[in-house]
Image 1 (cartoon, rainbow, N blue to C red):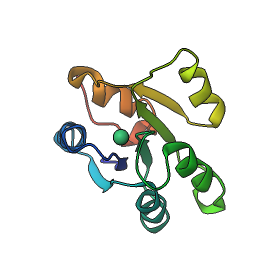
Image 2: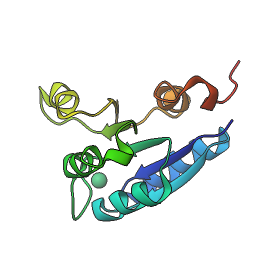
Image 3: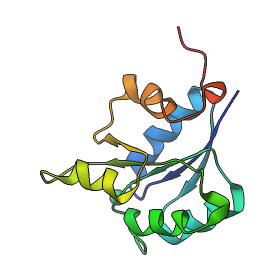
Image 4: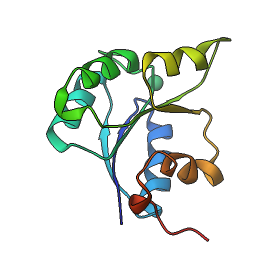
Length: 129
Ligand code: MN
């Protein structure tokens, strides 16, 4: 069964790669290129998972998370940070902020789908050998 995954990413090349990998695995993708659009789309479409770049325009990833966490209808929605960590301590900070987890950039295409699916309910994962 396919998952509906909201990708929040402002870099076109990263976005194209992530969309390609997830759709090839059979998932349905929704895209937001800034933080306000991300919150709006999450509310409107109730996706199964959000993959969120931390550095996006208008609202950053932390602000997006805060808004989603403040919405009772989205309380069970996992939000995973996808980001390049520049400083020591960033990883712990991401988890403390309330992200379900993180996937480091640059992403590894051969591992990415599996990394993402670890955050999906088992019935939403693609069949993998
Ligand atoms: Mn970015």
